[in-house]
Length: 113
Length: 116
View: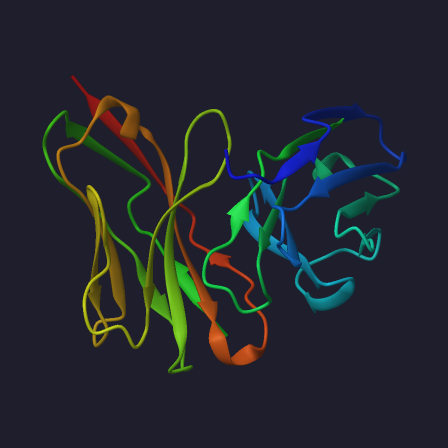
């Protein structure tokens, strides 16, 4: 158990809908990362937050957005969902923005029908 | 730009034998970190081992060791005395330290199957 929690574990929704994925980092970790793992794209970095502020952006679609709240939990919002958004979404955390190890949560499996 | 290449889609090994999973990387940045993660069928990503580009010695963590050959830009994972529980996907990943953030760039992974 990495100490990173993600909810929900599974999510099934329809095209065009909007969902919110939630992540609670390990106690004391200030940095949160979101990754998407899909069959065709592999594991891709989406976005990083550090202490409430966006730190880095990767291949994140405009339909997707994220934020980190004062209590350091983070949410990833996915809107206008398409079939291709079906994937495993991971949250990871680390103590700081340049920490070596990132601790991954169990992931949220999103299925878009 | 940074790139990780894992050329072995699948590997088979017998229990108690050693296995090497290949990873090559490409970056022009002199300061970087290399990682290996394990992903069992349950889906979680488990950190195994880390090697910094300036580390003089190869990293080791229990049965895992990282064979770091900087000139060849390779960072192979060696698992000694394989166990059935080692059957999983293994991902090599990289970060660049000078960019001010630590996004992980992953390879495509190698599926390891350990047989009795």
